[in-house]
Length: 194
Image (cartoon, rainbow, N blue to C red; front, side):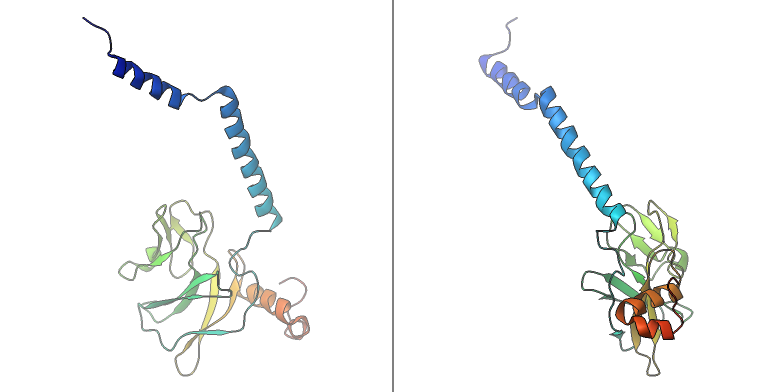
């Protein structure tokens, strides 16, 4: 029985050399990843990174009309803020950010599903209630931020403001109004903290 051929020994040597990670390389990788996590968590906790609804915008017409079961996507309040207006089966009009609260993947409207699982994030199987924005299953940690939508006399749908996860519609409208026009916010009854 003969040993491995020279080609086989060369292949084993090459594979061994490619997979060799030194202790120094390992520590460098761990330090880099740890540093990245520390910087990222500091930026998030300091509020430096953009959240849906940061900033203000004038009302935006998003659709001339929405029939029950239809949805329309748009950017609001900024060009990086993806949003959706939905006319539910009972005629109610709702608006949500379409940025999943888990890892910022896109949230989709599934009109062929029940209201309680009508909003779906395909990245990690997150599911949201279309009427409330609440998480119904999956990993998302909090509800979707609300986009405040209204319908005018002609049936057109308008986005008029935002409310962050857990923030009331009134507080969201007052926050936006305070940022745009503090004097008008004060006259409208939006005190210092709403």
